Image (cartoon, rainbow, N blue to C red):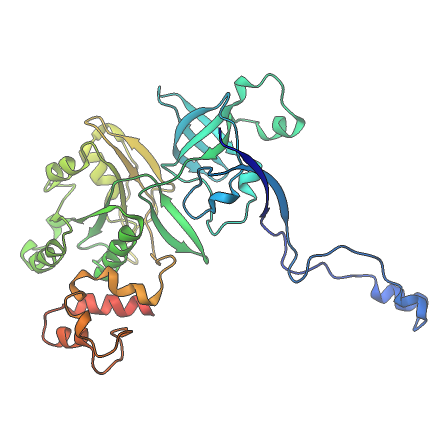
Length: 388
């Protein structure tokens, strides 16, 4: 074990402004404008917003989850701990599976829950963690007894992540899943209608999280496939495997099964596009709940309520995620937008300005390429949407 040292870290603030003194009116009634009314009490208060800081002990290079400063992760000993992987998260409780297949209901260590991060939740589906089973503790504090009701252990540490799918939610980062190899972007051709700009957002998020994208156009039995060959060719030219599927007829299911074999995959897309239906066809023993789309607005009804990591019988893992109504990219700078559109790259060096944003400039080679149909208008519209 490496050397340890003490550091000061920020914790989540309970409130942004100091509490207001509520005794001023009563003090005026007692003293009026007398000088003793100005007598103040000595207080210790941080400058500006209230701060919450604490000294923790950490190693020189401790492992840290994506988005958390490694220097701020507390050091813990793995003596008495077991390695596992998070199958699903239910609010403050996580279901963790060990290598031998045992499952534990675990809470998150209090010091990790209260550390100030830009993530909505420190633990997410797919995380590799170290947890301490309660059965191994012969003596527990009163707080542990209170927190361990209906729980089997406590998550002590989260290992570094690779391959994440993330989005922005309520001004913070929401990591949908961690430690995956690829994302299957499931889009329905009808019911609900196809949204190409949402596909482009998923492709950008996959590039951010360094996972391989696969585009699955579902419900092909309800449309004329020839009308979508242009879109399929476009994304195939960009290096994204794209094909039609149908959970009803079985079209494309065998190819999808081959792509899932031996891989760690996350299924993501809008509500009602048929993610769970496809997984039920790929592995019928799953028995995932499915529902019809709404007759009122042709949108899904959020049948899947939480992301769950599922082991496949033919090898590999898959994560079935809840449907999304909106997908906003997290931590995207304007100057990075063009990097998520590879078809722009041959034209960028010919722009008239080194910092061209390809939105309003008059000597923009990308805009000329769109006018000449070297770049599709739909992809350029998605680029403009990233800026907005």
